[in-house]
Image (cartoon, one colour):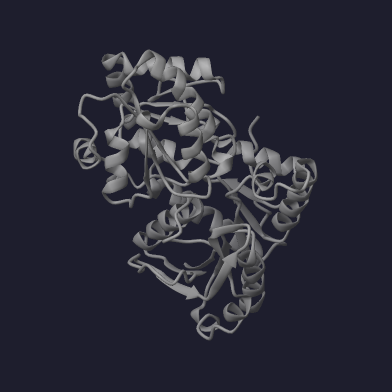
Length: 399
């Protein structure tokens, strides 16, 4: 199978969409398929993935300077696409890539599919503060429903997100297919080495958060929770790994709460060593985002055997199982901090959760989930080839 993917974001821009694209594309290639990805040119970084990447000129996005907008005309004029014999176009993001992907699918005579990675209803008001939040939520629902209706098939990372799309009125055939974990990359990390590099004593209690530092990630809640944890564990340290537009405000809040000596912002860390070391330096991993359609970093922590304390909202509700490497907490500073303190003070309970986490994570392997994606591709292709004979794929919405 020859798959053409198109996205408004990809590495070196770090987020869950980039990770999902890379994970699935690598697995497809390992299984003998061909993948070409159209992505923005960021002007730096190099591509060493085992699939073709076509970099397109881009310009800055005013409301989020980390991101870029693909230059539509450069995609349309690219000379090398028509002759490739692609079987389908998989659209990964809802901006220029969505409309360019639809145009490419029409030109190539193949079905377009799309992944719905981001819960925009709970996202836009963080970046467009002058417009009433209720208006933005309404616009986000209309926007999402219209785009989902444009494609032949829809991939959604969680049942919760699919139920929301169905409430929007989306009728497009869909499958719930989360992004898997490349377990060979998340088997071990050098936590002691990370602590040594950052001057953290081996005996100091450390909790870790990994993720994009964005306003919708609810990291402010974790900082306020840390105040209570510090009262019970005076030498506790929260390590925050990641980059993003909220870093300055988070550092300011940490200072306001008197947490300068108890927080360490380490910035963006590469996978393949530094990131895994950071996870492994933690006694506990913490997470509280309300907007995750999956929550991939939680699975990465579990795969490395790091006990997790997290809320269970939207996508993370389907990832986390109480006792299977994690404790599920309410979004309440008292409850959340109590569970963190409990684990920091109980090495045996941490050991039990570590063993359970590693076992649980094996059920989220990237090869198995890539097979599910390829199966859905096949169903959409068969239906597209002859809809009179092949029935439309039907999703299973649970709950």
